[in-house]
Structure formats: C-alpha cells, structure tokens
Length: 315
Image 1 (tube, rainbow, N blue to C red):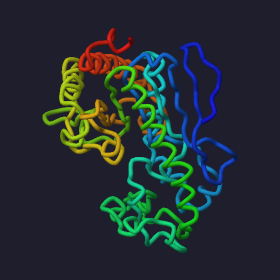
Image 2 (image 1 turned 45 degrees about the vertical axis):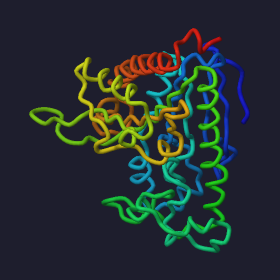
Image 3 (image 1 turned 135 degrees about the horizontal axis):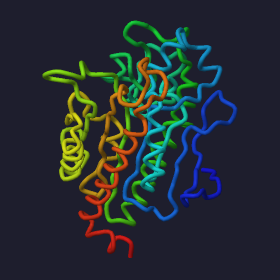
C-alpha cells in the first residue's frame, strides 16, 4: 500500500487495492495512527462512493440503486470518531454496488455471471443464501427496483473485483487487527454500518437507533458487548442486540475472541445523522460522532483491561 505523510494527529493514510475500471483510485484507505493509540480498529465496508463510469453505465437505475446500497455517509461518522479518539480506520472507497465486502467471495449468484467459471474454486459455484436473496457478493436486485444490471457480469470482471478489492481489503483488515493485538494483547474490530429506520421513533415499542451485533456471541467477548449496550442505555439511547442485524462475513472471518481479537458490528439508524430525505449529512452527525467517540474510548478501556491494562500492553 502507498501512504501519505503524517497529519496533525500523527497518522498516515495508506491507500490499498484498486477499483477496476477507474482511473487508479484505491479500493480503500487505512488511516493508521503511528503509535496505535487504541486497541480498536473501525472499519467501514459499505460507504464507498467512488463509482467508475463503466459501473454506472452498467446499472439500470444508478441514481436510485446506488444510494440504497450504500451505508450513506457513515464514513463521515467514522472519520470524526477517529479524529477524536485516535482509533485506526479502514474505509472502503469501492462502492457496494461493485462488490460487497461483507459477503464471502463464494456467495455469488452465478446466474448473473457470464463466461467461464474455470478460475473459481468448486465451492464458489453454489450460490449462498445472501446471493439467492439478491444481495450476494455482487448485488443483483433490490425491492421496488428489481434487476440492477443491464447485462450479465463477465467472469473476468468478477475476478478483478475480488482480486483488486475484496482480497486486499480483508488482508489489510487482518494484518491491522493482528498488529493491534500484538501491541495491546487484545484488539477490537468495530464494523460500522447504517440501517434504514426500523419503525416509528415514538410511543410504546419505539424502534431502536442502534443495533449491536456479535454473531450471537461467536465473534466478540461478552464483556465488550455488555459495555456497548450499557453505554447506550446510560445515555437514554435505544439499542438492540443482534436483532435484526447480527453481523455477517466480516465478523465470521475476523472475529476470534480465543486469539484475542473481538469483532462487533454496529448499525446506526440513518435518521440520527442524515437529513429528512436520508440523502445528505444532517444536523445530528456531530452528536452521533460524539456518542460513538465515547463508546470507542470505553470499549478500548475494556479491551486493555482484558489484556492486563494499558501500561503492560505498551511495554
């Protein structure tokens, strides 16, 4: 990966991967604090907005489909939290419409792919549950819009997307988590997403604004999940655990509590930080950033306690 000089917060921006069909744009950017100040990595896999013209031209309804597939501007929250706390950030630039970084590379709807499948592992030739629903490794359709693409995707193009975006992103994520774990004795991945409103915000049974996911206990230490839920409850913020979002491929692949690496997914309701049309950043974005900055610092403290404290980890 290439990198730029350190900024005012003693960090470097490392560019990695390559967006197929673009003009050399990186697939993701890793904002690494030189001192690895916290044992927390915030990843944002679904907010990429670098759409090459070749991708737009393949879409049937780009103006409608692209924003619906994105975790719209949640990367701005992540950047604010990173600046406030010193947490490491991994932010995808490649859009979810091109390839979904929270899906297994085997979760392909092969009916939308043309050409030879000879270069793919045999296990990849069976469509997974997500791809059958239309939201696999490459999204195929959305409710109300139907099919997203004008033509089938050439298998050679699919290979490029996997090799140039998906593979290097997850390699960078794995290496960074191991570096944090090696320094601190433990590490936490906070996989940041946004969700549409789950229901009315007022009255009995009001919908939650945050969902904490840990693959039903498999991907994250329970003390960290409890700390996150307590954080929201203490501030009068409605939050849920695993329902309706428990996490996906990112947590399955990278969460390994037995090896000192926990992975937690956090869904943020878009009404909390976008405008009324849920299209552009709204007035609430600063408050959400502050809420999550305090959460990250609390979780970092919990990770460090579990790894015998900050002082020992820094030695």
